[in-house]
Image (cartoon, rainbow, N blue to C red; front, side, top):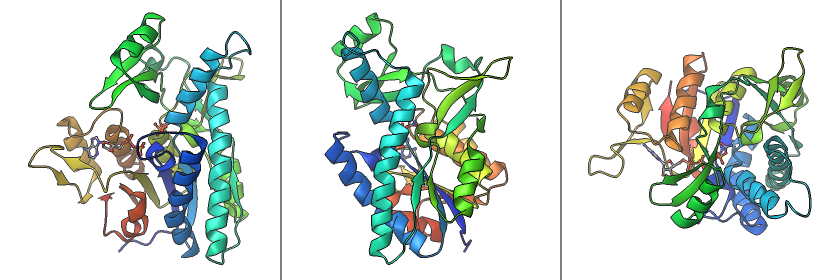
Length: 313
Ligand SMILES: Nc1ncnc2c1ncn2[C@@H]1O[C@H](COP(=O)(O)OP(=O)(O)O)[C@@H](O)[C@H]1O
Ligand SMILES: NC(=O)OP(=O)(O)O
């Protein structure tokens, strides 16, 4: 069994909303209160954790508020919406995790960091929006928004969802601050929502851009820059499966980056959901990380023990 000393845990949107995807404050608080329990358990067992999280439902909701209120108060850009979600989710997560640790007799501070991530202004993703955010709507409503220039896609079985550009995360600009928190014994919540995307001009100045980064891709980068041995991608399924939805469906247990890439080429993973998780696990291990685990949050400890989930090494 591989021991984990420093783990990056990436919490999916599913871990922070109601089971039906509702993202009212009470839904988010309740989901987060449950999500922090297994994390607190792992920390109280002596493992260092860096937390990161998604923001798809929340950032999409903020955009809708911007649009509806545009005649009354000035709309703010998408990078600001990303920063706002880092703050609200980070605030909720840090309080809930501190309380869960205290209940276990562990007095630890948890601090959420507004985290910027460098992207390339010329990234092809700006011409090809593919990151789903916000709520699911019916075809008619999606068609009305599309007619106004927005991009919407159908997500099988769930409805239509807005998509925005999601460039490749290149560098975590606040990595030094994350490492400083760790060194001070503080549990960092960092790069939420994949980080705030910032592009740099020829004169070296940074400017926020209209995009939402993929939190799984950024989590793989975060795990590398904090020198984590393990990346855990916590979602709502026990692991990645092949032949999904068919009688041959089978969960992938212990596997390698090469094998995962073969499955990905064969089309076993959906683009907007399991695809980026598998890619993140592959990237982390291929760049020297010890192992990556894709599993549900309630199996976190078993995933770390190597007895549950999809384990890539
Ligand atoms: N091959 C696969 N194995 C397992 N789940 C898959 C696969 N392909 C697509 N999925 C979907 O991926 C979902 C998890 O991704 P997503 O909803 O984006 O999670 P999160 O919001 O937790 O990051 C699962 O609920 C499942 O519906
Ligand atoms: N930013 C991001 O990838 O969020 P979700 O995981 O909630 O889609």
